[in-house]
Each structure stands twice: as C-alpha cells, then as structure tokens.
Amino acid sequence: MKVLHTTSSKSEADALVGYLSEVSIDAAVVGHFDAIFRMWSQFDVMLRTESDLERAESAVKEFMASPAAMTEDLEDRSVADLALLDPALAPPCPACEAVLPLDGGLEHCPACGVEVDVGALVVAQHGPEVLATPGLRAGCAHCGYPAQGGPSTGVRTRTCPGCGRPMGTW
Image (cartoon, rainbow, N blue to C red; front, side, top):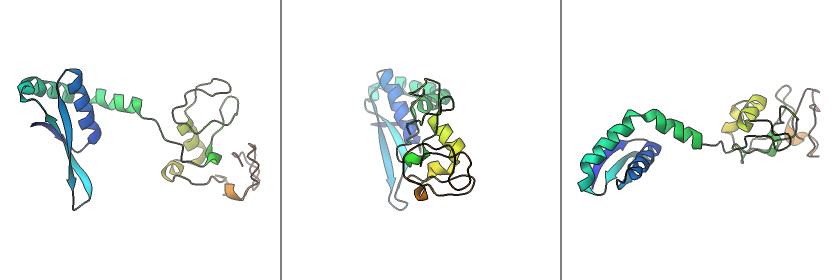
C-alpha cells in the first residue's frame, strides 16, 4: 500500500477516499494514534492497488485543488444536534409562535410551514453558550429566573414569572 496523502483531518481523509472511489480508485484511511497525547494525530490515505498510482496521484491533485467543494459538501450534510438540549429551550416559530421541536434538520415550521432555522432561533433567544452545555436548563435571559423553579405546566407562556418579559416554555 502506498501513502497518497496525509492530513490531520479525518473528514478530509474520508472525503478524499470517497472522491477516489467515485473515480474507481481503491483507497483507505489509516489513522495514527499518539499514545502520549492520547489522540489521533494524523490520517493517511492509502492506495490499495499500486497499478492505479498515476491516476490516483492525479486525482488527489484535482481534489486538493478544490477544497471548497469538500467544505461545502460537509457543511451541507452537517446538522446541529439539538436533542440533548433542555426541552424548555425550544424556540417559538417566528410566524405562528408554535413551539418548534429541537431538531437541527427542521427546515419548516410543522404548524404553519414558514422556513425556520431552529439552531439559530435557540441561539438568538438564549445565547450561543447554551449550545456548548448540553442539558443546561433554560432561564430568563433578562432576570435569570430559573426554568426549573417555574411552574411545570409545560404550557408555553408569553411572560417570565420573575420579570414579566417574554419567556419560553415552563
């Protein structure tokens, strides 16, 4: 087996192997584990059949010349995992105010059909730090009234019991 490309990005190595497969070149990713730092340090894209070496090297050059295509493809396929967030963080639809499910792949409100970005709505309502702390309970962004201290009716209220400003699900 011959090393075609080495990278610190597993995503890049996997994307390159996928690209090579599309042009009928058999390759694989081999990761190197750094025992001192206890992490994967680099990934080699290995050519399985050396008779394809010339075509493979040319294909790697083509792939590396257009990294934007790989980045766009990965971004298009990525979806925010909002499932671990507290259900109280579920934002309202900006059009009909129905509570949206915490689903990063949701593109339209189930109630009214308007286009939505649930992750962006959660960040706008609660700040970006809420995405960094799975399981974080929501609270009023204005006065700090804790969601876990509010009535557990599960009903969407328009105001915070602490300060009367617009609030989330309690």
